[in-house]
Length: 357
Image (cartoon, rainbow, N blue to C red; front, top):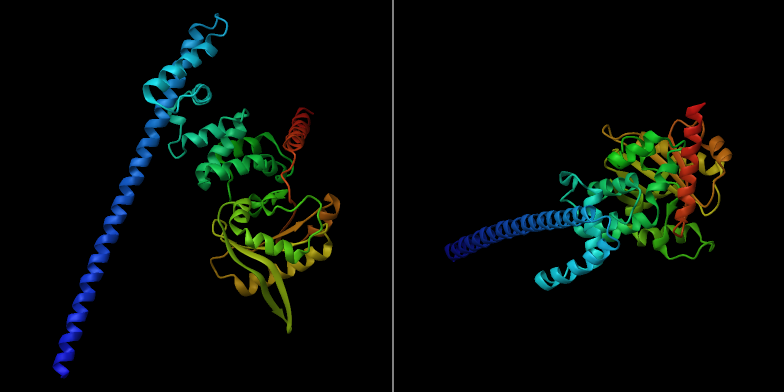
């Protein structure tokens, strides 16, 4: 009887081993297929971008040769669209050919075209006339792996302008650095935006909201909240308890930024910035630095998200604190792009004039 059970056990072990080996082999095969498909997708995208770039080049060169003929370009695109569509099918509408022309004009050195971006990405980028701004969104799309929808959202919420205004006294070097490298995350200030845009919550402008409701709404839309926060953020939790002398305190939302290797503590205020909020958050940061951080973590970062902040009050509320504490406004609607652009231009002009003096 015992020998029979041992034989059954041995048979079962053998069967499990065979199934395990088969599963591992299948997993390896799936991974190999996925890699081949990914490589094929990259190859197809590379060929597509190269083809569209060359078509754009041909269109531009022919237009330059016939620039003295009125409406030459417009008529040529219509005829070209008709012939290419007849020969190759979809993808050669007049509007798409116009994008190809602009594609070549914006990237006349073909090596500057990144195969990490799709044609749809480039069509979205080509809608931006400012080369510095376009370069910023291009770099950030590559660095952050934005989808088309995410790229559109970042453009529509004026991320570029908000980042420039968050830098304080914006100057030409700041603009060029953003354009050439995207967001460089090396200091706590690099993760700050002003304002933060929570249009994804669907809350009407100026509608009163409890802090607990705001927190709940942000967590329910955590993926979109993370997109707005930027690269490297990992969600830790809400209402994280801190106990001091048998008294419990709760941090509204806690993240960890893996790039800066630091905890990020966020306090939500549905009112304007107050000194009390800064003092409370400073206490939380002291606790995290002493009790939560390990030897590999950098000092924690605190962000107060409020509906409004007075620059003078903010300076006195946040000044002199040893911790990294920042205050930013948040809005529940997409800010007026023209106003933001005008603000950036005003700051740049102010800096330019001061350089002349």
